[in-house]
Image (cartoon, rainbow, N blue to C red; front, side):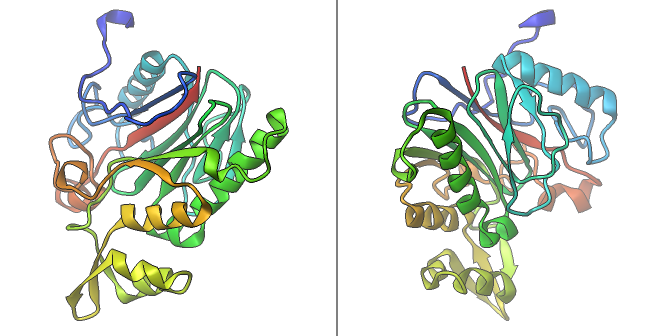
Length: 268
């Protein structure tokens, strides 16, 4: 890599059965120049970190993946944008889709669940930012629909592409750390009573919620059955793995701020 910098071994390369045309990576907090509490590979410009280090970190990400990452303005909604070589940073959406090489779909997280999607033949990719509001609001459904539409427009693929999609779930707040109220549980039960399996009661109207289980349920309901990545175990938990991952819930109050990691997927 340029200037003597190399991609950190601590970054995660998704283990999923995608085409060689598809590249993907999940950054950790290692390999950057940001100072505490954003040490060291913070990619967020909105969290209180200085602009200079964030700019260096973003340059390093682009250098490492060999594609141009496009950073969204994420608002915990369900909007999806189509990326192309002219797309600029700051588009307001919580998911993005791309069918052209050299442009990376990116979502930033620090407890929310990042989901990467790709079709088996490497024709289209997507990245999804899925906190509980986005999940309950249908961001996965919107992203799967958008990637299907993009494939139809690109090469006339089948209009129902879900069975041709592969999903990878990245690190997020784990099922032993994500405490929520009855309002969150009801938001999911209103759409699917099977979602109750993802909530463990703590008493007094509190529950521990399992974001990866909720995401897998939504993906399976859409017909996306090839799902890998986050399995609910502790090594995937952003809260418990403080040396490896940023966590807004863990660090924002205790340290005054938390950095952001990125899940990236692109076509070569």
